[in-house]
Amino acid sequence: MKDINWGELSFGYVKTDYNVRCYYRDGKWGELEVSSDENVNLHIAATALHYGQESFEGLKAFKGKDGNVRLFRWEENAKRMRNSAKGIRMAEVPDEIFIAAVKKVIKLNDRFVPPYGSGASLYLRPLLIGSGPQVGVKPAEEYMFMIFVTPVGPYFKEGFKPVKIKIERNYDRAAPLGTGNIKVGGNYAASLNALYDAHEEGYASSLFLDACEKKYIDEAGPANFFGIKNNTYITPKSTSILPSITNMSLIEIAKDMGMNVERRAIEVEELSTFEEAGACGTAAVISPIGQIDDVANDKSYVYTTGEAGKISTELYKRLQGIQMGDVEDKFGWVELV
Ligand SMILES: Cc1ncc(COP(=O)(O)O)c(C=O)c1O
Image 1 (spheres, protein in one colour):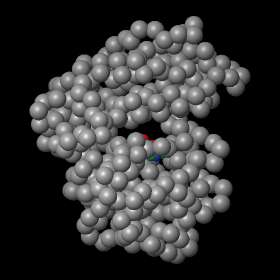
Image 2: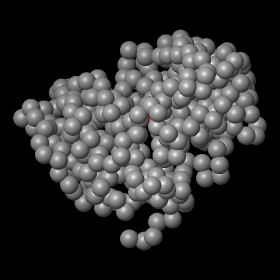
Image 3: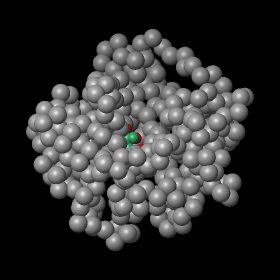
Image 4: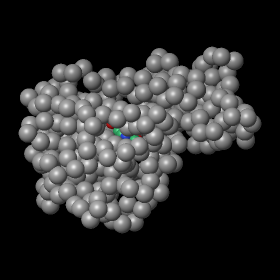
């Protein structure tokens, strides 16, 4: 293996040594298998390919100063994947198999866990797909659960920098009674044009609105949205957004910092009242938002033209500190591998 320059890694795919796989056949899950093949051999009529029976997760493992590898709230990822499976009628992966696969794939790829202090971490991508064939629109009878890992770099190479995003008014990501609240591939397919346009126009991401009334904030690309005002952390309540594990953790940290928390509908106009705004998710923890443009209405909401806000920065430091093992884990979120 070439030496990896941990600090130069992006959020992309790097080949590692092994992945793990488990098959659901005849109504039950089999034994965990180890593979060094990056390819998947799939039936041409697999439901994942035709009817979108596909769900994935994303979580990270961090090496601490003490040399231990830490996992952050994996139970929440396992639970969300079970909900995703229910949402599109797939076989659910039991927690025991989920965590056994997580630990095994980390241990097998130990040399790819970035060192403490590099800012990099090991990203885990669990994947559940309908692998059995169907021609009519029906759920598969066979499923495949896999996890691959890839080392990913620090999200903010040049520091914790505020980004500019745009309100999306040309596309909807998810319907109120659709699949926006589970982590299935179809939601991401539906967001690609919006994200492509946003990037072309120089924005870091799109801010999706509720698909029904176009009145409320949903989420920011692959991240939840939050705003801060009057010592209150405010984040959208909506049936069409993904329950972010980062967001639920920031909520607890905000309370611990003595802030109030509100989870409720946020009207677009309320954007003008926030002191700080951010997007949160596993990839970056927090992307501070400097500016939100509502191009169609010729409006801009500006939060900062320089540094990230004080509260966002404190939330970021506290959560990242817990993940890395630098800050006491008083919430019991971290598990050693
Ligand atoms: C649509 C969407 N929203 C929010 C998030 C953030 O969720 P989490 O904090 O669990 O990574 C993600 C990333 O998983 C996502 O894909």
